Length: 116
Image (tube, rainbow, N blue to C red; front, side):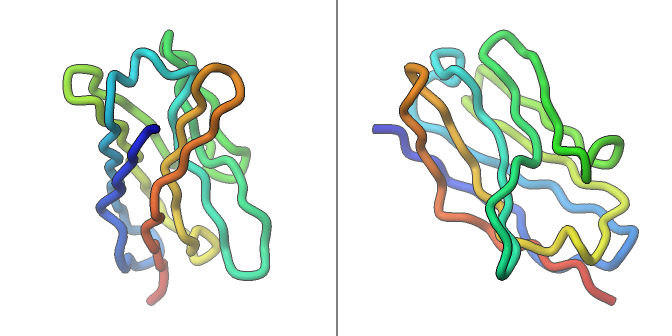
């Protein structure tokens, strides 16, 4: 079992920034990848960004160039730096881990609201 705890969500103005953090149980080096997904009301959950155990990074098209994923393997943490936020970034953001090629684990989610 993998436990994930997100923090850092909240309210931001358009053009503003927020930083999300995800603390994982166990060594994140052992996970296939770790990352962030989001789900807005009435929409499907979508990939925001993820990083593999060897450091390869993938971003969703809508956040490319604005969001940055990073990790600290010494602390088993993953971060999401979100810049130039837009109202359409409003969603619940979930931390995710894939392990052993098939086991998905999710955090409880943190709300991000972008509004003036």
